[in-house]
Length: 126
Image: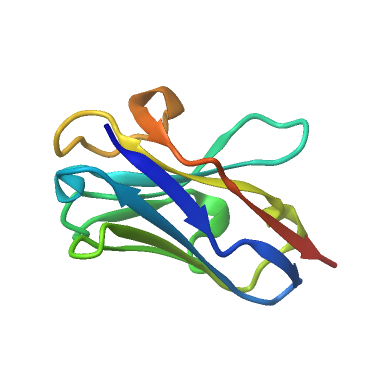
């Protein structure tokens, strides 16, 4: 069992920055890759970023490359999403999720993640 709790969302002007955090409870956090997803109103949930179990590999969706950075601290059971140069189209509820399977490989598919947080709202005003 694992519980994930996100924080750090809020309202920011275009061009601004936010840092999302996700704390995981439960054992063996360091053995699992993690991902960030987002869902805007009326749209499907979409992949944002992936980080492997060790933090040595990260992958981003094209729309956030160069602006967002995913990282993790396995000693603290934390995963982060630093978001810079925010745009109105980044407005969404952001979710962290645990990749299904021990040391699972890169995936953008939501069904390949088994534990999800409740989400944190990010709103970017123009």
